Length: 327
Image (cartoon, rainbow, N blue to C red; front, side):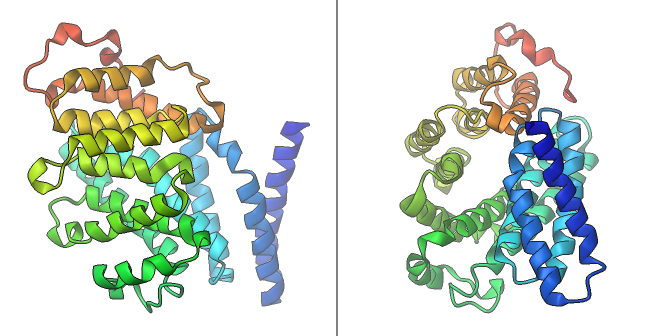
């Protein structure tokens, strides 16, 4: 019965998508778009529970274009804009940035290609999220946003805008993180930080405590002279883990990838990655896709531990570090 329900929902979405192109009335097209978006949002668990990463990548890629086509028919649809912001962000993180990391030590040109692609996708996601915020924040364009005005206007937003603020900040911050040599991009980081502060203040549990995860990476991924703070990073990672009840394995990965490497704590690095690798395949089925991505990333990162730590005993690395990068 559940399988029939899932198939039926996607049939409805497919038929609705086809109908968009044959209906003459703009208002009817918008109604079809609205109903289709609802079906897709209601069915998002189908993607989140997928554990075959290739199927997930192909499915998300095709759905991203479908969503953009629908936005052409209803450009003011805020639910659709936010759905696009979230989908582009997660696709960039799970698949494009992951490809960048897989080539990091073997093919510099290929790694840089996927890095550039990931930045572009993150910025696309940011722009979609900001489309829903420009009016409430009284900006006419993203270029008008400044730290001083954002400090004044952000507190005035209704709590219903938490989702948009989070995805705008998440995607913007992710793009900046991949563009660390661009000083203009880096200069925008305080605005991203301010937006994550807003999320924590108004709904800290949103997206499994994702704003706390960002803070953990922010304080843990940079040296002290640039604002790095080990204690603040540890506190933020712990809060993210507490909120998600340890169910989101990417929390452990990013603690290893930022805090543990930055402060050259190999035990922290190894312990966090092994928690991911040793977690059962069906660990928190509701987010099986995200956890499958975390497992692939963790195995690869552990294999390349010697690239990040000056003095480690190779014999201390578990057998998992011999796994192929492309698993």
